[in-house]
Structures are given as structure tokens and as C-alpha cells.
Image (cartoon, rainbow, N blue to C red; front, side, top):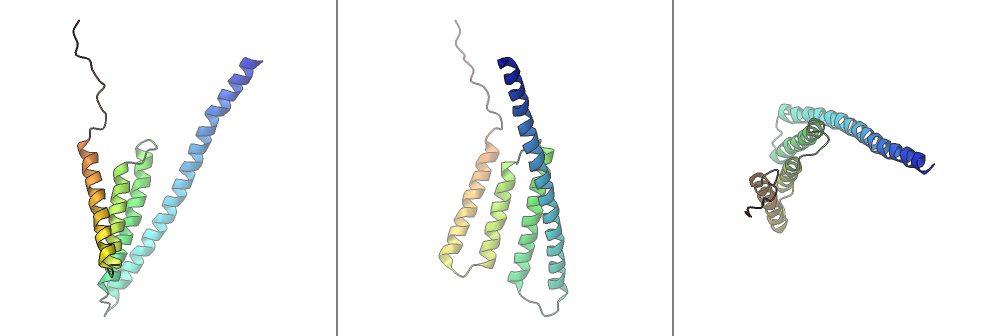
Length: 148
């Protein structure tokens, strides 16, 4: 009786992660579709700004370009999630963070201290990216070089 219970329990435990992974995949696909719609909407706003004669608000123009790239990076991150066997590469989070900070500097640069802090955050993200790139992906196992 106990073996049967353990077997059924292990089957249930193996099904739950698969169901949750399927739910997560469905939600990410839905999010990708919503982001794709917003990306297209941002393109139309971008073209309206280009076509409008007398529109010289370069801050709005640059802010819309960076919002476009944020949507683009999030969609790319979702695509990579499925291509890399359900893993988000860390570097894409760094790309999104750097782009978001650049957007903040361009749009909200009224306070110099805030701009300096945003710049320091960008520097920290870039240093983190550099460290991530120079660190080997898989660390070699420790080998003993003692001879007996």
C-alpha cells in the first residue's frame, strides 16, 4: 500500500512542474503578443512624429525610439527563453536595464543628482556585463595534482 502511494505521489509530483511550465509558456506567448502589438503601436507613433511638420520635440522623439527598443528587447528575451530551453540569458536583463536608464536620462534630466545616479547605474550594469563576459560559462572541476 505504501509503495503504491509513493508511486502515485511521485507521478503527481512529476506532472505538476510540467503543468506549471505549460502555463508559464502560455503566459509568455500571450505577453509576447501584447508586446508585439505595443511595438507596432509605437512604430505608428514614431511615424506620426516624423510626418508631423513643425514637430521639433527631440526628447519625445528619442524617448519613443528607446521605448521601441525596450519592447524589442523584451520580445527578443522571450524568444531567447524558448530557444535556450526555458532559460532567460542574464545579458538580456542587462540590456533592458541599460536601455531603460538611458531613456530616463534623456527624458528626465532636470535634476543633475538623479542624472548622475542614473549614469552610475549604467556604469554598474556595464561593469557587470563585462565581468559576466570574462567569466567562463562552466567552471572546470577541481583537479588534484598530487602523485602518490
